[in-house]
Length: 458
Image (cartoon, one colour):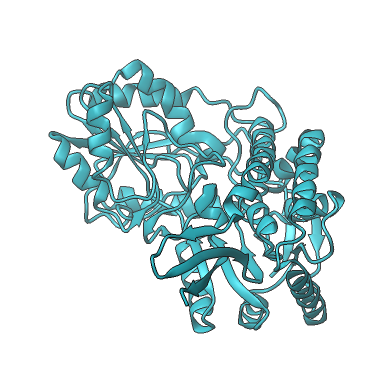
C-alpha cells in the first residue's frame, strides 16, 4: 500500500511515505503498552487534561496551516477545512471540561452492602480512519481515549497521509508522551497483526462496509472490542407542510458539503407529490449555482472529489442507475473546464427498488429523489435500506416531525437540518452503518473497563 498525497485539484503527487517496518510496529506497541501501564490507575488525568488543552490551543493557532494540508491531501474547500480544525479544537474544550465527571466512580445503591463502578482504561487501541475528514475522524476517537488513558495506534487512509502525520505531530507538540498517538503507514496485513497482539484491547474504525467487515472480523477473532462507523445512505424526508424556501436553503449543505463526500450527508430525498416538481426545480437551481475551481480560493463552492478512483466509481454508479431505468433531471455531464477530479452535481429520479443503486451509498455530489403520496410511504422508503446512519425530517410542524423521526431506523435524525456534528452529540448508526458510538459521553465510555467494586455486609 502506497501512502502518498496526490492533490486532487492539480493531480500532482506532493508527498510520499515509506511503509512502517515490523520492527517499528513492535517499538510502537511496546511504548504504547508501557504508557497504558503508567496511566491505568488514573493518577495522571490532570496532566493529560493540560495536554489536550494545549492541543486545542495549537489547533486554533495553526488553523490555516493545518487546513491547507487537508485541502492538498483530499481536496476539500479551505473554508470547510478550517471549520474542521475549529471543530476538533471544540472537542478538546468539551472533553477537558467533562473528563472528571465522566471518569468519576458511579455508586450502585444496594441493600446488600456497598458497591460502586470504577471507569478505567482498557489498554492500547487500534484506530483505522478514513480520508474525508482527515483531522475530525482522528480527533473524535483520540481525544476522549487519551483522557481515559488508552494509548492509540493510527492507520489512516493512504491518500491523506500528510494530514494524519500533522495531527500526530501536533499531539506530540502539545506535550503528549511517546506512544500516546502513533501514526503508522502500515499495510492491511500489518493492521491484522496489530489487532491480534495481546497488548491491543480495542479497535475503532470509520470507513466502508467492506473495510468494516474485515476489521471487525479480525477484532472478533481475537476477542477485541470494536466500534464501527460504516457510512450511510441517509434519507431526507420532506413532509407536505414544509416551507420550500427554507428547504431550498438547506439543500446545498445537506448534499454538497465536502463535495457530497460525507457519510451523514442526505443522499435520498423523499418528497411529497404536492412539492415534488417544485423541489426538483429548487434543487436544480442550487446544483447549477456551484462554482468549481481551486479549493484554496474562498470563492470556490464545490471542491474536486478526493481522487480519480472515487470519481470513476461514482460515475459507474450513475451509469448503472441510468441503465436500469433512472432518469437524469440535472447534471451527469463531464467537467471539461477543470483539470482536477471534479464531478458535476447530478440529480437522479425514478430509481426503482430493483435498481442496483437503490441500496448503494453514492459518495459524491449526486442526489436521488423519490416521490411519495402519504407519510407512511415516505417512512417505508427511508427504512428500506441496509444502512441506518442518519436521516432528516423537514417540516413546519415540529411535533409531527418528531413523530416521524422516531419511526426511522437510524442512529441519528436531524429535524430541519441536513446533518450536524458537535462534541456533545453521540455519533453512530445501526444496521450496516455499524455499531457503537463516538463523541459525547457515549464515545468517552466506548473503551472503558467498568470495574465493579463490591463490599457485602458482614
